[in-house]
Length: 467
Image (cartoon, rainbow, N blue to C red; front, side, top):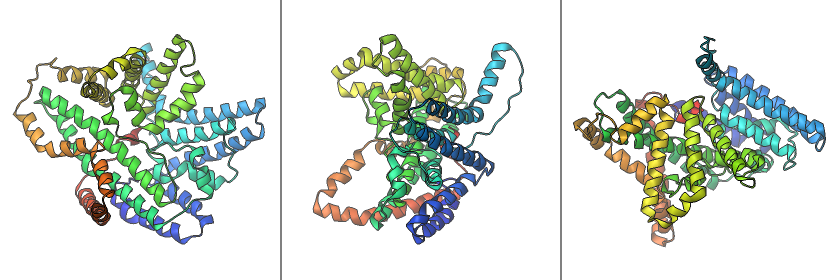
């Protein structure tokens, strides 16, 4: 089921909210658990079985890890926990990748299994691991209530595409959380804003990308339009989902950490990754980079740690070489910045370092989007004139005019400009009252616009569903 669907917006969510707020607090987690299983199993019910099995196994292992804490058996059980979670993820997501590459290396023809990837498995696997690893580290106690643990793992607002919510951040909220009209209103506004980002902006940019791919009359300008459109599309798609997840969480009384902080205003790759998909970056830092030794080791080992983390960051996103290259591309740049480039960037005018960041990020997402590295190199080369394509032509100018408004809205929306203006206005008494009146009106208008778009458009899932 999709957040951006009529079924979810006007049938599933209202029914769940009605039941949730009617039942007593002791039953609220059970309502969320049942509704989350229905939400997750809507398209492929069979994968609910795998998820339920994961929950039961990790529940038992969590208790065993705590029981034998400080003894050798605890290490055995944490290894089993990590092995089970990564084993399931590896089987569903990477089996065909390894078979294909083994065939290519050996000349054999082992048939691919063509395994269908369960939606959201990359996200809830990391959430499960954050629970058992933190129990092993004695940062938290094992959860003895199976319903509470299951609710944390399958909570539908952030189950499918994050943000990655760690157990340590919300375990208290599973037992005690508050609800209020103000929280519900704030959550609804945040949800609708995220929905509009996905449906009205990201989906419009998808249309331009589809036009570009099908076009046989490309120009350098058109290549750059495509590259910029995809970078903005993935931002509004994923940050829009995060907004919706955070908004829904607030409605149900949960506080999820932010996942994006206007990454395109960054002036370095280091800063960009502090602002982009923050829950993933912090997960890899705390559960892989630091345990490997972080930067408190000799230089060769430090370089190794960075390459391992970023290779796996790329591989986490997808089972293909372009994702691995994408991750290693950032590893090289981050190393260069840490060694000397950041000092140079600090001395340059800020607009130059900002342009550097934008060009690098746009190029990186061309690699991310390509179906092969040959196609990625072809597109990047064409962007810099290494093809027979003209600088521009009537075709590219036509689509530039057609999508100019979408680009303008997307570029402004990717900055904190509007947010800053609203915050300044709230400090002025007259404007503050106006904003309080306009906020629900704007929210309703956006919801109506989104509904009209959904009724009239074709199926368009979230980009990160494939991860």
